[in-house]
Structures are given as C-alpha cells and as structure tokens.
Length: 305
Ligand SMILES: C[C@@](CO)(OP(=O)(O)O)[C@H](O)COP(=O)(O)OP(=O)(O)OC[C@H]1O[C@@H](n2ccc(N)nc2=O)[C@H](O)[C@@H]1O
Ligand SMILES: Nc1ncnc2c1ncn2[C@@H]1O[C@H](COP(=O)(O)OP(=O)(O)O)[C@@H](O)[C@H]1O
Image (cartoon, rainbow, N blue to C red):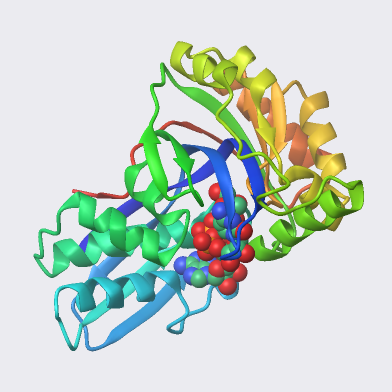
C-alpha cells in the first residue's frame, strides 16, 4: 500500500495570452503549492478502481474520466503493462472545480503512487512528460514549491522563495468550469474591442516585482503584486465572489484574488494568527461555504512514509 500526499495550488500571477489555434492560451502562470491537499492511496487490485472520501466526494467522478484513473492507465501503457491492477482511494480535501487544481493534484499523486506500487522507477522527467499529456496543471502538482509555468502552463521553471507565506481559501458553493472561464475571458476581451486571439493579445510575462517579493519572502509586496487575468471572467460568471473578496480584505487580509479559474478566493495574511482571524471572519460573513487557513510553499506529490 502506498499513500501519496499532494498539494493544491494558488496562482499568485496568472497572465493569460490570446486564444491559440489549438484551443489553449499561452500563460505566465506563477503556481504556488499550499499545504491544503489530498491524499491518494494505491493498493493492489484488479483493473483500475476508485473510491473517494471527504466533504466534496459526491462531486468527484469515479469512472474512467477521473484524472487519477487516467494517470494509472497512461503510466501502465507507457511501460507496456497491458492489464494494470490498482485500487486508488482519494481522500479529498481540495475543493472540487474550485480553481485549486484538485483533479490535477490527484492525477499527479496517482502517477507517483502507481510508480511506487508497481516498482517502475520512472525517471522524474518522464513523469513530468506524462503529466503534461494529462493536463496543463498536472506537471506542477508533481513539482510543488513555486514555479513559473509557460506555454499552456506545462513548461515549468522552479522559482526561488524565502520563508513561508500564510493563506486563507474561501470555498464557494458549487464550482466553475475551467474551459467556460477561459471562454468568458475571450468574450470579455472581444466585448472590450481588444480582440482575443494570440495575434491580438501579447504573450504575458512574469512580473519582476512579484518574483522579487517571493524571493525576499515579503508578504506585503507579494500581496500588492497578486494578479489574475481570469478574475474578471470568474466575477462575470459568479458576481457574488466580489462580496467574498471584500469580506476577506475588510477582515485584514494583505491581498485577495480569485484562485485560478475560481470560484475559490485566496487571501494572503501577515502571519498564521492573522490567517486564522481572516478565516473566522470570512465564515462569519456568510460569503463562503468554508474557509481554510493554510501555508506554503510545500513540496509536490510525495510518498508518505
Ligand atoms: C486555469 C488553470 C490555472 O492554473 O487552472 P484551474 O484554475 O482551472 O485549476 C489552468 O490553466 C487550467 O489547467 P487544467 O485544468 O490542467 O486545464 P486542461 O485540462 O489542460 O485544459 C482544460 C481546458 O482549459 C482551457 N485552457 C487550459 C489551459 C490553458 N493554458 N489554456 C486554456 O484555454 C482549454 O479550454 C482546455 O480545453
Ligand atoms: N480526481 C478528481 N478530483 C476532482 N475532480 C476531478 C477529478 N478527476 C476528474 N475531475 C473532474 O474535473 C473537474 C475539475 O475539477 P478540479 O480539478 O477539482 O477543478 P479546477 O480545474 O477548477 O482546479 C471536476 O468537475 C470533475 O468533473
């Protein structure tokens, strides 16, 4: 039996370029791994089977569309295993369809768990390549820490970080579909008259002020540099998120933004104590379903000894 712990992410910068011919957008995606995470346990079994526990378990598909099952099958196929046998149990803490890459996290965890269970010793670089085939966010869930993702987010460059940052995540009722949020971003750009294709929109770059704030462990400077080009689209599809962002800011958060494609909202706090207070105030405000205080950066998908 192998258990793998895997982090959720928040995008401290999500710069979105224009729509490419292949349906993706070029990104400047600064991923940040947080301690709020899932655990995936792999045991020997017949075929690829799944179970899931946790408050959002009912929203997780348990068929072959589950990214963890797809990861097991892709890893087996890569090694020429015709008839893979594994049971995967997902202990789910990451909000589902919340913009925190929970499915991608389980996918990365399943790669690591099956690799260990089947004693395959796949090189990390190969795992990263398989991860990129499974989804744009999956390679980062393997890597963890803080990294800049270019291309559609899969070309990773680890970034220097000092110290620990304290975060609060406000979980919304229901999710948002990632493709729908990217489509809304394109629609808003068309409406604004700027155009939405990759010939209209400049390819984004990482913000030097944000990179310096991370390297220096400066939470105030990081809060000032937080930026998400998908936020207007997420707010357009879910206007109630404006009240959540306001509630956390009024409660003393240094900075606030929608996490990735949303609808989870992320708040940067001064320290662990401030994060606990912001989480309590968010819950009391009635603008979210749950609020979790956590921290990062933390490592990517790793076997729990
Ligand atoms: C927005 C981000 C930010 O990290 O994550 P979430 O907030 O959803 O977790 C990611 O770009 C999501 O990555 P991921 O969820 O792995 O997306 P994929 O499965 O690769 O793609 C799903 C769909 O999202 C859109 N997509 C995704 C990535 C990208 N760079 N451009 C896109 O336009 C496309 O419509 C694509 O068909
Ligand atoms: N292991 C998984 N956990 C959660 N969702 C999954 C998983 N596998 C596939 N999905 C599907 O992926 C969709 C997006 O989920 P998720 O990765 O949690 O959100 P996001 O893309 O917003 O970060 C879900 O609505 C679900 O249908």
